[in-house]
Length: 126
Image (cartoon, rainbow, N blue to C red; front, side, top):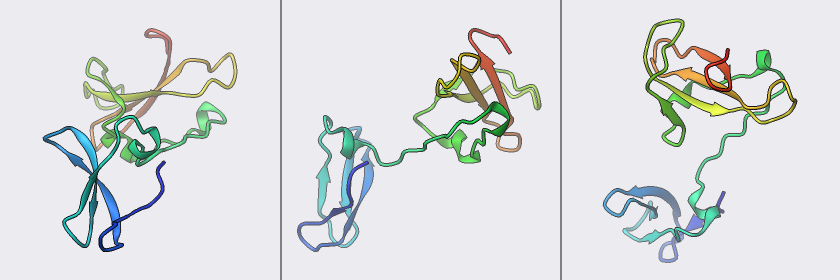
């Protein structure tokens, strides 16, 4: 993640905002109209939030409820929730720690009243 950026005009903290027209990240000053475009090749400046999931065992994995709002996660629209029947979920892969959990996917139902979590390995296996 990038360091905290400060405005070179008024020394206030700059916050990341999306420039929807250019589809690019921009830092905007909170105290004056100064803005700075982020270098698209800078990996450090383009990362504004990172969530690390520490995986010990499947039963101990805790998935935060805000994960369904994460725009960077892949969405599965052909997924059917076993709990509520909703047909969309976000999913991510657990880190490879042992051979029995390698390639394990975590699916989280996007129904805000459900948010059920299920685990799948490979193509369609439970």
